[in-house]
Length: 545
Image 1 (tube, rainbow, N blue to C red):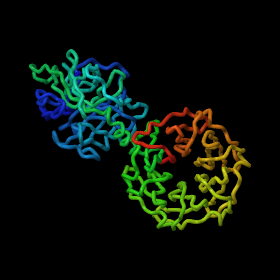
Image 2: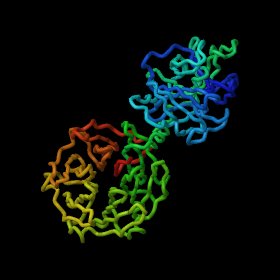
Image 3: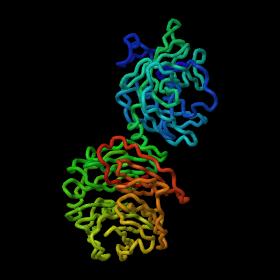
Image 4: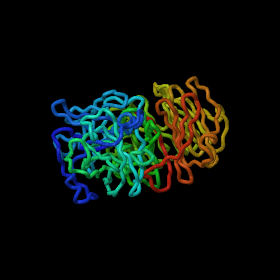
């Protein structure tokens, strides 16, 4: 196997710059192929062959799918001229990836790293039926045996059609690179640039960048060195997940409050999570966050947070990952005092916000143009129920459904599309009695509204459904699904028709499960909330496209 820089023409030599590379290797040429054996049929199906440019001026590289939409490869493959930076966006030259099933798909978008020879390249259409490679999250030990793969030249083939693999030894590890040496006659050659470097478990640890090409067809006969440089990817989990989150499709947008900090993270449709980002670092400082709620409108994520000054603030994370600045909701929708909780839900392109202030429930709407209606006191429209401690909202059948907790009991009302509210209904009377409710969450699915409550100081959790015909399912105990947890806060959201449930616990964990459309429950799993520090508090979850 031989590794190369990805240009089959025009580049015969390229200076290499890497802090962990010896002075002798600094004059190495780009790696373009792997001289090892041909990969077995079906092995490494996630590896792709890349062609950049037209027939008169083309170059070849290798890449690997990290999921069905994104390819990890070397940024240098897409450079307009050798050694120049690769800008984000559409490739300068037409680029095509040939998948392991033989299908050729155009590369339409690039997200490069600036600190290493690495780029994530987006396919015009997903690679259906081909799974992405599993990524390692830690560096292997020095001397570890590794595997590289590529479509580059071999010892005897100028343009091989078959994937080849080779065995390498890890020499040194630097902040952004690995230095490796081929075992026996294995080397990286032209065309192998961008190919994967895998650990003993078959996990992706790096993307091959450049090598001496010893033993490769076309290399000087006197060149025997098989050393190479690989760009690390094992330390870039949050970056990779952040880029993947830019792909359109269903996601679970999640807010977690810890101490006075609010964090935002995303559960992707393959079940993996991005890291969590400090929302105030993106949208502006509001003096800390006491609690918050999230709602999705198309691909945008709407966040309403209760700031340290007791006022509500609103911001939007756009589908492209950019954030707007927090705006003062109270200034736009009238001031409220004594706010303790907030709930949000989208109905069409309108954002409905319900706040508990001074033990009362207030409602406002933000339309698509960004205009807010004045807060309205629900007591005047629905009637009093005593001091309210928490609320939850859902969109079901185009109507706003709301549950408020007072005296440990849940009460339900509906806002029709005409803007009229029904009177409060006692949930216990239709879904069964539970212990005193401390946390409540709701989400709509079609015409149905799901409700999850935590009771008995959080030690018990129950689920019910208010169906579109107005009937209720009895509360079902979630202990068999969530386990024996003590909940601080519960959150639910509908994501691609399924109900996702997340809970923050008194032992400072986040757990997550899914109720499928066939009414079965998936396994409960802990959420590794990378980036979150402090004592967990409230949690909110909503689906976006």
